[in-house]
Each structure stands twice: as C-alpha cells, then as structure tokens.
Amino acid sequence: MKVTIIGVGLIGGSMALKLKEKGFAEFVYGVDFNENHLRQAKMLGIIDEISTLENAAGNSDLVILAIPVDATRKLLPGVLDLVNDNQTVMDVGSTKSGIVDVVKNHPNRNRFVAFHPMWGTENSGPEAAKKDSFSERAGVICDKEDSAADSLQLVEKVAENLEMNLLYMDAESHDIHTAYISHISHITSYALANTVLEKEREEDTIFQLASSGFSSTVRLAKSHPEMWVPIFKQNKENVLDVLNEHITQLRKFKSALEKENYEYLEELIRNANKIRGILR
Image (cartoon, rainbow, N blue to C red):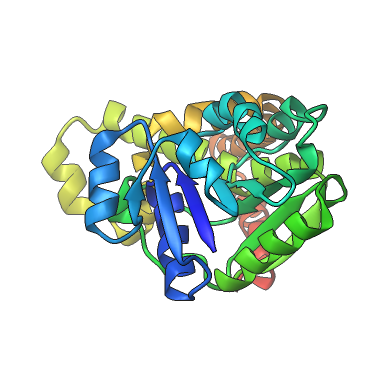
C-alpha cells in the first residue's frame, strides 16, 4: 500500500515508521512545507520520496494529514478534491468538530475518516518520531457513519497496525472529553511554568531544585505554540468551560489555606486521590 504523510513530524513520522515496520505501508510519500523536515525524514527512513501534494495524493491509497488543526481545516477540502472512490483520507488532529464541519458538504466526504491518536510529547520534528509510540494508546474515530465502509475499515486497520485501542464517538463529544483530559493539562502546565519563571528569577536554582514531580508537571510547557494555539482556538468553548472549573478548584485550595481549614484541605486531597482507581 502507498501512503502519503502530510506533515512528517512527531505524529506523522511515528505513524510512518510503525506502518512501514508492519509492512502495511510499502511506500511512503512525504509532503511538508518545511524542506528541512522533509530532508530529515528521508534520511531517517521515515519517507521514501519527497513529493508534491498533487503527485502524492494522486498515487496513494491512503493520505494522512498530520499537521496542526487549523492547517488541516484549510487543506482538507483541497485534499478531498484530489482523491477518488478508491482512496482514503484521514487526519490525526486533537480537535474534531471544526474539521468535520468544514467538509460536511464535500462530495468526497465519505472518503474521509476523522481520527485522533491519543499520544504526543513536548517534542517535534522527524527526529522526535518513534515507531512504538502508539502501542496500547487510545485511538478515536469520530462520526464513523459519515465515512464509507471501506475507508472506515482501512483506518481501523491503520489503528490495528499501530497497536492502538479503538474508540468511537461523535466529534462534539470527542472535543468535550479531550478538553478535560488533554487540553487543560497543557494550559495548566504553561501557567505553572509562567508562574515559576515570574517568581523564581534564578534559573540555576530552578534547575538544581526541580523535583521529578515539578519536571513532569511542566513537561507539557515545552510543547510548541504552533501546535497548541490552534487547538485552543478550535476548541475554545470547551476549553473555557474546563478552565473555569479548574479555576474553581484552585480557589477551593486557596480558600482552605487562607482560612487555615486543614480538614477541608485534606478532604480536597482525598477526593482527588480517587483518580488512583481510574489511572493505575
């Protein structure tokens, strides 16, 4: 099978490596506006050929858009213009409602499958790609009833080869859930990093005293704004809803400390400990 990867960075590159290892992808075209990324991807064996979008889409069985969500919204209709009834297009975006909405009336809508692999790191670029990144992670297919049966089956096969656990939901529900379990984590990490940078001006002290807990909490703050600003923009209403609730929870902790209500503080912590039974 011939596959096109549009966006040969962390996600697209990791998918290509795994699909090639599994023998699912026999040949991979790489498309990216970043010429340096394309050269790196070719050198690392992520792609087999650097190509134009038109050439790659015209010669591929599967086209994967692995670019920021705002770029996906702009490019997806044009990609669907290039494919026929024997080809499939999928994306890997962290938001879904805006993406499916922009192609809801496209004549080739049924050739598209909205997919979200629930994995990522703070790193970017082809050199960050790892072939086993998706193993045992959740993969979400949205609005499957709007995709042709053969396209849906192909993307399910992709998820199987990536060794992911498949889930199905509508795009709106997906965006609500990801706001709670993914997007708010990044905002919290950015905010904590800014707090520390504002109050602790000695960089050497931060480096020397940083615990593993602090490092893991702010790890996401290393994630690039080129990726996350579009996500927050596309999922604005859901993120704001979650952010308001998060601020409410922070105020509870603040109030407990201000009032020296340590019994309530313990109650808040014990309630939070319930997450142990969910995330093991």
